[in-house]
Length: 160
Image (cartoon, rainbow, N blue to C red; front, top):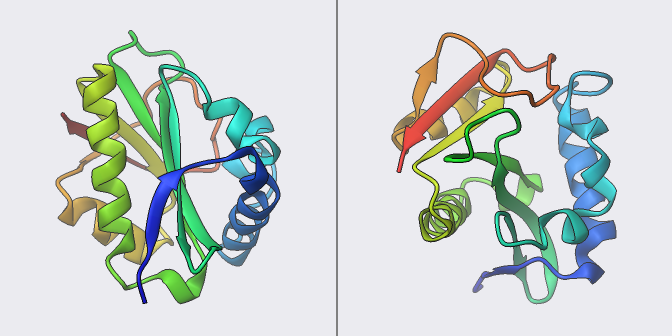
């Protein structure tokens, strides 16, 4: 079946919030210091609906399977974006959707004018870490910016 990658719509807020919370909970990434607590989780459309951010949804036959976005990295000089909220239902994983979605996000980041893309994750998300490294992200020794995600222990950056 075909998959559609499209910009988020306001009607997607409830389902993408549920997906983010489901995936993060499955990896025990719950509580202070994790992005599950970010205020935007319940209002993704509103948060990413500006000229410096974008969030994309992947769907199949009208059913939302996950999403990923970019936004300015808090505390940076404005040239670095953060890859944010890249979460997919288990049934959508391993199908190449992450690679397609990442390409869409990085193309948008370049179009906005960002020169680098940063991301944070946790070491126990082994498949995600392998994915980021395979896509050209370089592992960093410490956190950048002011994300408030003290629960994260793994950091990557890619020059665009």
